[in-house]
Amino acid sequence: MSFDLLNIDEIGKQLDTPVEKWAMFDLINQRYNELMPTIFISNLSIEDFSDFMGEEAVDRIRENRGFSVLFDGRSYRRKGA
Image (cartoon, rainbow, N blue to C red; front, side):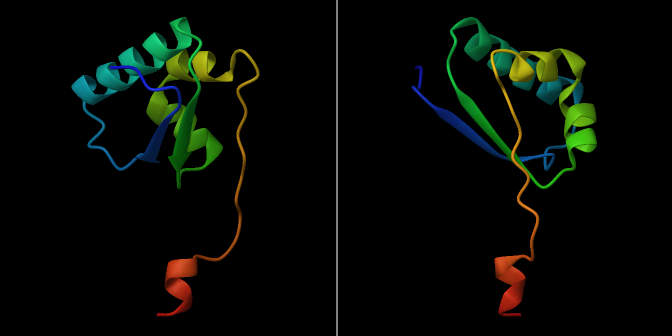
């Protein structure tokens, strides 16, 4: 099954096992080869995101005008606490 747009949330919450890294790279590589857009959402810093995903995956994400958007502000969920 292929989706026109894939959104992957909570990047960095996985166990960071070799199997998970391979599965994520495989997914990114497939979408890269098919020129399909993918959105990655994470609370990691840019540097930690790159370390977590791996150099090869990040290279594919950045190619073809891939970019990051930083939302820097207070947590809405913690506001009511």
